[in-house]
Length: 259
Ligand code: 13P
Image (cartoon, rainbow, N blue to C red; front, side):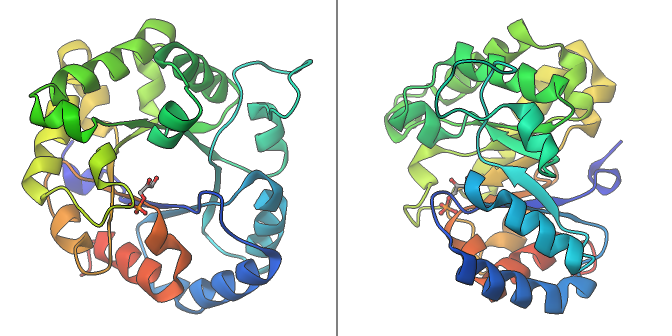
């Protein structure tokens, strides 16, 4: 299986941004040009409280866009005030969930172990986890990029079966590129993606060749195409630019094979 057999994917991570009126405007704008986006999975990841609204609006538009959450908890239910389970996310229409975003790791002190348990819970609830990995600036300059990413991947594989990656996706998001305007070069991104795929191939070449690996970190309309052309980059996880209709559409279009 090579790049052409992996379906490209672009996911918009809205982070803690959005409102009812913003959703009306953004989804209206996206819907107008959705017909030109063929052969690609487009996932919208709004904050928890807007998931149901976005799900209903996508349904009304008969949209092919998919719905994802930005986080979940590792337990099925119980006394975990403020948390949301993977089954609840499914219940409101989510198919995807971002797990282990660097903002969760850094600002909310999520450990590798917690992230691994969230990943497993999401997978077993029937969601497709999008596992985020990435090194900080200090880790990159001190030559630890691959050690850090390996540790982040291995901690998930200790808790969840490798088979999960028949469905789950990976997003390589170098922390130094998130929201900074500094994008990894296509070569830097592809180098990490190729290494990740290689590690998985050591255990299961078939899973490795099928798993979709997205790049995230200051992806814009102007740099998306060159990143997505790389042989092991299967699309993107987009922050800021996913809030602007035209920019997001242009990024999605860059991931299709008819550009
Ligand atoms: P930006 O695209 O705003 O850099 O954010 C990337 C990101 O964190 C997506 O999850």
